[in-house]
Image 1: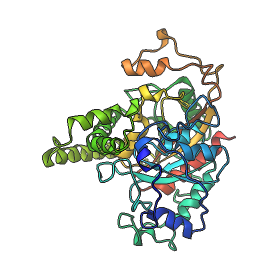
Image 2: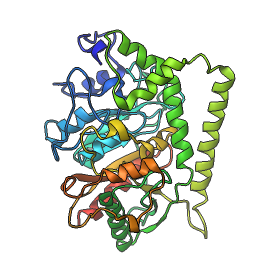
Image 3: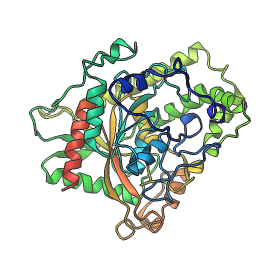
Image 4: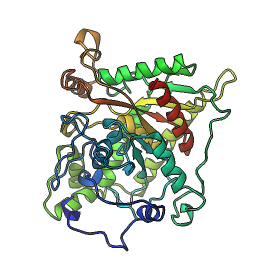
Length: 410
């Protein structure tokens, strides 16, 4: 972060995205805070410090797009854009009660953007809109991917797919949705998040939609593959950038420091090919599981309702020791679109701490995350969930989020 603090962006360095937004009429008036290397769950750095949630100031605004999320939550802007390689749109959006869309790679322009780990394409960073209103996300997407903009003529990685409307047919049909329980076989969510899942499930079923449990037994393998790739590809990149100014590593980034010291030369072409093959197999297995939900004459499920993080919104700096992006990062390695939506607020009277006799930790790390939960401290913290769709079905994801949100607001 310190390396770039006083380095202005020249017109030649400007990425394609703001150029298109400017032509569409966007007005830029400020830059918002991000964490070191844009690879942390909280927005904190050694230059501008930490960004807090304006909803519950004892909690973080999330990362890496936490500055953008805080500004939006304070009504300082109607619409913002974040980037996401493991949850950097969805985590800040969830922790500040915003709608935030992480699209599949290839839908939105990424030419010349500055990422935390430039050059690696094992898992691609994408960018997407964030806002207090679902309709603003629709506006952004329809304008950015219009026939007039033709971003696919400007970015070689963009797919020639104009934004579509009314993709759920027939209109107003009932949805088939999977929903995760209170854990992903690695980490258990806090009581407010579990309540949000249960209330959302009940509301959807009462409205006539079909909801069934989705068992995420393959998520630990997906999360492990993601984190291994980050530290393998990103160790020296992050370390080299920090070394220029002597900027220290935050605790949550010690894995990158360790990977840098061990060296990346051990990753030869054969090992890289094996990583790609394992990733592709994980993607195919997940696709097959999704398609297998189409039984008894019914089509496969429309989408998945999931937590975004174990926390409603995490206590400031708790992720320095307890960072966990497994709920979001799996969909980056799968390259599936996902959008957050506000669900409820933590309530100390409804969301009591679990007693040891009622709950067993999945592992020591899970026990530490659960030990952080304090119903009094977290009272009033925003709780959000995410809705996941199949690859390149961003239009359907936003339409499903509209359906779910309208039900929860009744």
